[in-house]
Length: 219
Length: 317
Image 1 (cartoon, each protein chain N blue to C red):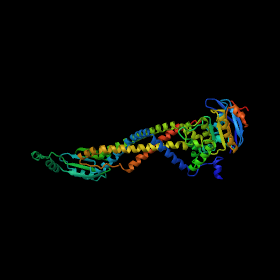
Image 2: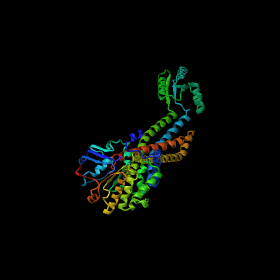
Image 3: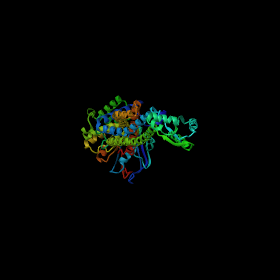
Image 4: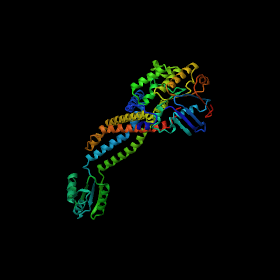
């Protein structure tokens, strides 16, 4: 799985705000695309709809041909277990160690503990934090916390990786490191969508860019 | 092939035994949480225990009163019929009553027998000897079968009041009836308090579980993001509820047991004054298991209530 299509998607929130208006997009399997636009343009809403944390008011979101906004409550967890998501605020569990944070998706999917250990170690090694697995998130720098978030997103080897402003709190050098990690995952076949308003970073990379404004595609 | 169609393009990652591993891990985490938050846990156990102890005590009272009623089965309900002086149909009435299904026995005391008993018991024989005629009436003592209904007593009493030669009819309320009435009252009170305090126990657990949910909202949001099912999100809190409820049930058994220890001696003294004795029963393994099971079920009910309210519409991002 990896091909994502937004077909004439509208999203209106209960307060009347139109987050998306007639949005149609295609993210090809194995591509890495930047989703950009001003604050409130609809970037985060796109990712929320892809994670099925909300439903479109109108239109379809197809992932490998399946309309994910109509997934049953029983199938939804399996769908989410096959997605990876990275957030600006990392969404790490403060009271759990780095290892336990990264292991969470695998334990949620009831994986054997031996396999959990193997995969978490591999993911932490990939983001350069293997030596810090027993620390708590608050004992890490912001950049390191983001890398823990990335390790957690990729530990279950998802075919789709979503990132919402993953470099929002980082300096340019760390941002480049993070983007290099995403490119690495994209090179091994993952479809990567990065929502970001960091123009300089986007322009420094040679990836397709989808620009949103007031919920519609403008570029 | 069929499986992959059913699951769509998103296969299950889990191992077949993984679900049980998940239960085991959650159970360990809940035990750890409860044992490390001893203050809160003890308070909840005490509150649930007190709520369960009162209806459980009433249940025990009802059980023992029923046993007491069986032990005192000899004291059946009865009706005494006092005849007019010189009435000639006493034996006929005795025979008529003896044929009724609800009547177990009819004891006839003639005027002469009444006089002899009076003389023997009171020692006033000399005084009565001076009277020209026997002033004591003949009487019938009607004893009813064990399961005779109160209406049957009243029906027989009414029949006798209308019979020729009958001066007075006395329906004797026996201890048995009183005990049965108290037993029925204890049963009804047990039901009422059982429902009220049961709801109370469930609400105490619901409130505690709600606090537990609030303290772990961030974790729940992240779990939902990484693909936890609703059942997985609910599971730890249902375990919380069950554990708090079961602990409350245990506390209730301890409180009831303490109550029995305190009440046993004065109760046996009281019964002794009526030449009766009773071995307190009902507090056995089945009682303890029922109370702990009931506590656990009420705790889970409270947890379900809290989880439904709190996890519905959990805003993740």
